[in-house]
Amino acid sequence: MTRVIVEEDETFESALRRFNKLVQGDRVLSEVRRRRFYEKPSVVDKRKRAAKLRKSRRQTSKLLQTET
Image 1 (cartoon, rainbow, N blue to C red):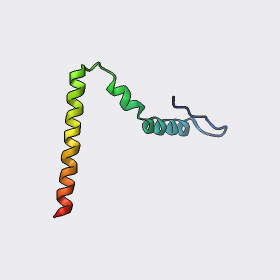
Image 2: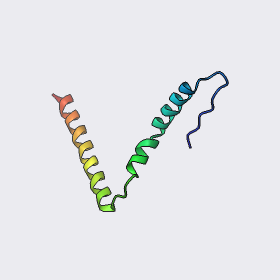
Image 3: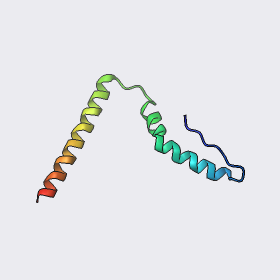
């Protein structure tokens, strides 16, 4: 759980900014968005396979660019 302890002379806006940075760092919002709707296991597998393919293509293209 993300917590922010507000200092005595700290404004609410600065505490909120610190909280937002911590939440983004913990990737809480992306997890909430991902779990917002149920995904069938087949859809999850398909999405993971597509991400893996994109990553491998990106790495291959980087290798080809550095060789030339």
